[in-house]
Length: 151
Image 1 (cartoon, rainbow, N blue to C red):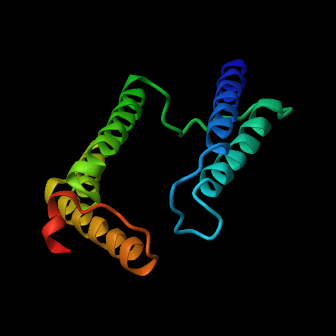
Image 2: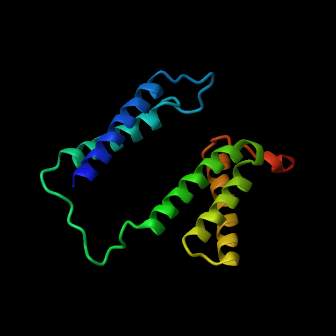
């Protein structure tokens, strides 16, 4: 229980630090009516409220015996997930949204037990669908990277 409270308190401090950094963010251009800092501040506010509740709640969380224990295998998957997200952030601009999302989606599916072919098909279709949704429907410009010739 103490570990949960300390962990949530640490994340709460990180959320507050990120909120301070996001508060001063101003983009040179804006394609949203509320500006580019509204979304991160909203997410950080919701996360901070949940973390505050976890830190201050009066009763401990009861674990179900059927739940998977937090062992080395689970922690390894969490670390691999974080590494994949860092790789995604690095590949986003040079490879573009579709290719980087498809690659990271494929390896994320494999990480959690997906087979190669269904994982690859799903990752490619989801990446293309998300690109069409955001870039074409919602007018959120996304980089095409190596697929720049398609535009």
